[in-house]
Amino acid sequence: MIEVTATNLPRLIACNGSRLLSALASVQQDNTVRDEGIAAHRLIVDHFNDPLTPIKKTGLITDDMIEHVEKYVSELKLAELFEKTVVSLEHDVSIFSDNFTISSITDCIIDEGDAIEIKDFKYGWRIVEPENNLILMIYAIGYCLKYNKTPSTIKLTIHQPRPFHTDGPVRTWAISYNDLSLKFAEIADTLNKIGRDLNTGSHCAKCRALSSCPAARKAALNSIDVSCEAFNDSLTNEQVANELDALTKAKFALDNRISALEELAEFRISKGETIRNYYIERKRANNTWKTGINYNLMKTLTGIDLRSSKMITPNQAVKAGVDKAVVDNLTHRPTTGSKIKRLDADKQAKKVFK
Image 1 (cartoon, rainbow, N blue to C red):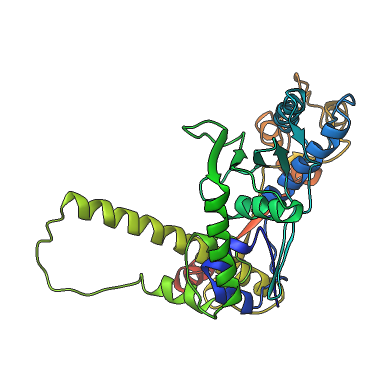
Image 2 (image 1 turned 180 degrees about the horizontal axis):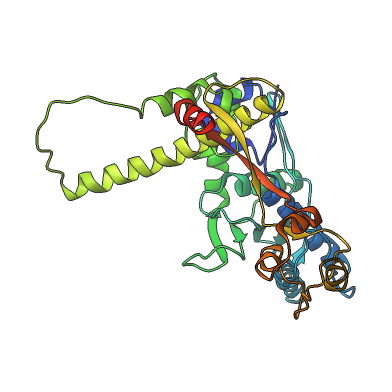
C-alpha cells in the first residue's frame, strides 16, 4: 500500500524510488519559509471565521502578512456575496484506493455548481504555477470523487502575493473534468505500478533524502571535468539556447546537491566527527550593547557622553574615545548562523605558524 500526501505526490511520480530512501531527519534545515506559510494559512482560517477581530502582529505575523491575508480573505467573502458557495477552508479531500492513499487537505474550494475553483495561497518566494499543477489537480479530483460531482470546468488558482510575476499575484488555469479524469488515470496507473527508479529534477529541491541519493550524486559528479581535442566549436543560436537551458538546470541541481551535503557535513561536524578539509565557521553580527546598557550608565562608567537620538553603536563608542576593553566587556556579538567552508590546510598552517 502506497501512502503519500498531495504535497509529496509530484516527487513520487517523478522519482518512484524516492520513497525507499531514508530521510536524514536529524539534519537541521532553515524552516523559516515553511513556518511563514503555516502561519499565513492559520491566519487565513482564523480571519475568515472571525473577520471582525483585528489581527495582531506576533512572531512570524508581520504587517505585510496581515495585509496579504486580509486581501485574500476579502476575495473569499466576495465569492460568498455573489451567491457562490465557499466550502470550508482546509477541506479533507483524501483519495483512497486498494493500492494507494493520497492524503489531501485543500486551502479553499469554491463550488459554483457546474464549475469548481481550487484556490491555493502560497506565501513563499519560489514561483508556483497553476497550469498542470499536480497538487491542485489532486485536490480537485479528490473533491469530485468525495461528493460524486462532475463539473464541466475546474479552475485552478494560485494566490502568490510576494514574488513578482508578469501575470500578477493571482493566476488561474482551467481544465475540463474529462481531461482531469484522464490525468488522474495516469497518476493512478503510476501508483499502481510503482517502481524503484531514481530521477533527478526540480523535485529534488525539497527532498529530505537528497544528500543520500545516488542519482543526485551521479548527476553532480557527471558535471565535473571533461577532456577534448582542440577545435573551434561554432554554436548555432539554437545550440546556444539549448546549452543555456541545460546548464541552468544543471546549476540548479548542483546548488541543491551542495546545500544538502553542506547540511549533512555541518551536522556531522557538530557531533564531533571529522570531514576532511571542512570546518564550521560561525557567522557573527556586529557588536550590540548588552541588556541594560544605556548612555547614562556609560557616562557614569567612562565619563563620556554617548547620548544621541538613540544609543550609538559600540564601534562608534570606541571612535568617541571609550576604551575598547571596556566596550568589549559590555557588548556581545550574537551568532547569526553558520556555513560550512572549505579549509586549505597549507594556508591555515602558514597563518598559524607565520
